[in-house]
Image 1 (cartoon, rainbow, N blue to C red):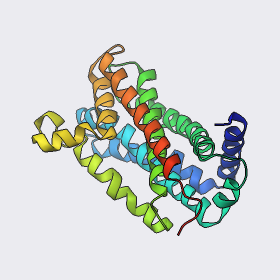
Image 2: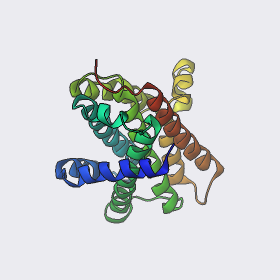
Image 3: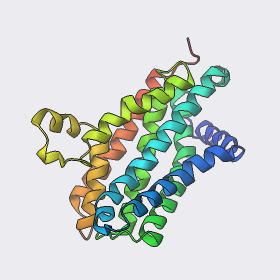
Image 4: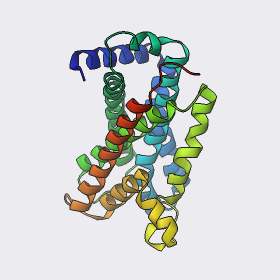
Length: 245
C-alpha cells in the first residue's frame, strides 16, 4: 500500500463527483427524502417512527452507497480507465482504499445530514448519545460502499450491478430484525441473520433508541460493521479485474 497513490486516487474520485451533481444528490438527498416520507407516513403514530426510524437511518444510506459505488467502479472498468490505472504503479488495494476514502467523506456528510434531519427536524426520540448514532450511520454508509465495490467485480454491465442490490441486500433487509425480532425467528433464519452485517447495523440503532450511555453491545455491533467493511474491501481488492470479459 502506498499512501500517496491512495490519496491521489481519492482526490480523483472526489473531483469526478464534484462534476456529477446528480450522483451527489442521490447520495445526500435521497436518504433524507426517504426518512421524511417515513416520518409523515406514521405522523399519527410517533412511537412507530421512533421504533423503525433509527433502523432505516442505517439502511437507507447503506443501500444508496451500495448502488452508487458498484456502478461507479464498474464504469471505471468498462470505459478502460481501470486498465490504464493498473498499468501504472498503482496497486489494487491502493485503488480501493482511495475509493473508500473518497466515498467515506461522502458517507460522513451523508450521515451528518440524515442524523441532523432525523433527530432535529423530524423529532426522533433517541435515548443513547447522538454522536454514537452518527458513528453507526457513518459505519453503515461505509459498509454499503465496501459491499458495492466488492460486487462490482462480479458484474459485466451496469444493469447487472444494479441487479446485485436485491440479490445482496434484500435478504439482509428481511432478516435484520426490522419486521420480526431476530430472537423470534426460526433457528435457521436466526443463524443466517447472525452472519449478515446489516443485522448488527439494525441492532445497534435499535439499542440506541432504548439504552442511554455508551453500551458495550453497541460498540461490539459497531466493531462488527467496521470489520465487515474492511473484509469486503480486502475481498474486493483480491477479486478486482482490470476489464470486463
